[in-house]
Amino acid sequence: MTDKYDLVIVGGGISGASLLYTTAKFTDIESIALIEKEPAVAAINSHHTNNSQTLHFGDIETNYTLEKAEEVKEGAELLAGYLENEDPDREMHAKRSKMVLGVGDEEVEKLEQRYHENGFGDLFAKLRPIGRDEIGEIEPKVVEGRDPDTEMLALQTPDGYVVDYGETTKSFVEQAREEATVDIKTGTAVTSVEPTPDGYTFETSGGQVESRAAVVAAGSHSLQMAKELGYGKNKVLLPVAGSFFLADDLLNGKVYTLQMKKLPFAAVHGDADVHDQSVTRFGPTAKLVPALERGRLSTVSDFFDVFGLNAASFLSYANILADPILLPYVVRNLVYDLPAVGPKQFLPHVQKVIPSVELDDIERAKGYGGVRPQIVDTEQRSLDMGEAKIVGKDIIFNITPSPGASTCLKNAMRDTHTLMDFFDGEYTFDEAAFREETVGNFPYAEEAVPAK
Image (cartoon, rainbow, N blue to C red; front, top):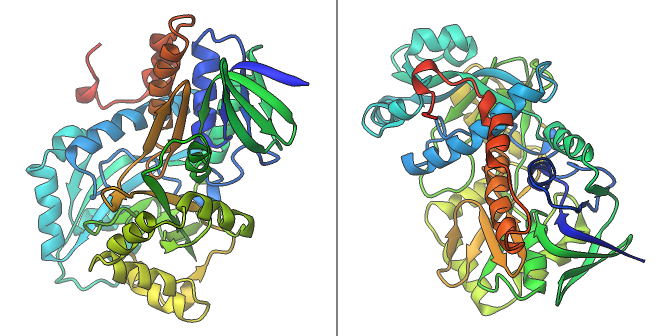
């Protein structure tokens, strides 16, 4: 028996679920199915232990240009508005202070320039520079024990969103389930996909599924499926596994450090866990792994499917890893996972945030951390920073490293418009209603409310 749908979404993480919510609630597409290989949605990278729990706006992420920050900010406001509307009891998120910390004359100067000259102070109405005394009032442990002669400055906002992306994923799915047009197929692995004259046929562990249009939002596996259909031949993946270290009750909110230039990985930061503020997390580390999912040997062969074992892939890896900044970084991050040596080597990163922390205060978090696929362009032999999207004939493939979760609704909105083109005007998307239910609930600073 074959199930037939107008739209099939493969992947039940935050990206697939946000698209399901958007298409189910705000379009008139007649039949939609979400297919997820795990027994429940949000089981892998969207689970709250496997990501940084940060809603990225671009205000304290110092590797963002002003242009990228503007784009990310728009996407983050959509999701923040959704959370404000749907989560009044704060079961999916928390609101806490967040800051990026500059220590020493050079870092202080960089933050001052970023705020005053580079336009970030104008773009983010609630962001403000604060000195040692005010940093100490908000985050006492950040100042405690630090050399009083060392210059300090932070760019801080009180409106930091800490998000359980797993619970948010479930919320999107629950909202979509209210529509008669939606089927959720968990515990259903896609084994192959074939194009047909009318769309696509998916062979799954639960039987055959046909669709007129499809979106694959399966993280690293999206590129694997794209290549099966002949797309993305000039792309491979550099999978990066993130880990965290835990300590007891050191921070009230998020404290980021300055990002190293040329690195696509998140700067080490400390923050209180979304569900237990007495637990402080430090990380993430960034270890290269030949697998598409953390701790799953079965995905090693999937990695080699995507890698291709060809000259272009090897030369691209060699070119990237020969970088004098990236190579030492990669080597150091391999050491952080070693049982005895790792915590000792990672401790200076923690002490940059909390000077008084000692080795006995931190431990490597077991069961924390996921795999983030960095996109490699084998023609340019370089990392392709940011989110990757491949649009084919009536099919979209989303490969979403950070800040994919933060911008999931913006990405869903964009994909929904593309789907409307696929259906050639047969269906419509009520973007105004979508915006009203999401960014319409975002609490802007009075001077920053966008013109209507």
